[in-house]
Picture 1 (tube, helix red, strand yellow):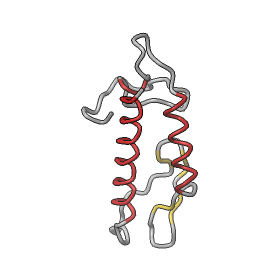
Picture 2 (cartoon, rainbow, N blue to C red):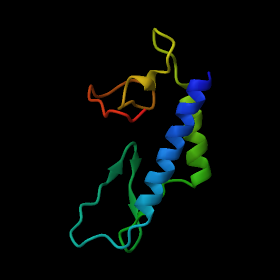
Picture 3 (cartoon, rainbow, N blue to C red):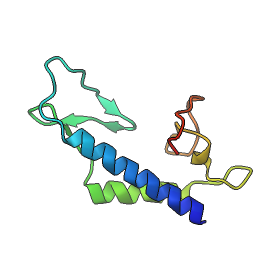
Picture 4 (tube, rainbow, N blue to C red):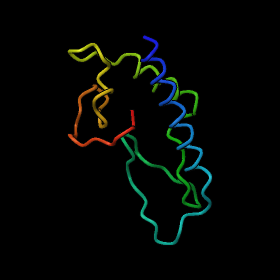
Length: 103
């Protein structure tokens, strides 16, 4: 299960870097598109247009790690997220597209 733990930690580090980059931007450019929903969550913005977190960081991290640990195995014994990029909360792929090197 060492490989599974490594993938979980690499995913965690990727999310941390992504969130840090997103949070570092100042006020959005005039007329910038704002999404109503991001992933499976309603998007909320502050008065300056900065995206607000949907839950506290520690809770989001716990929820995500729990999701990865509960992931069922495929027919070869690998967690289902190894071979799919777009997966819903019930671990079912919802697109046939692949983003190389994301997992």
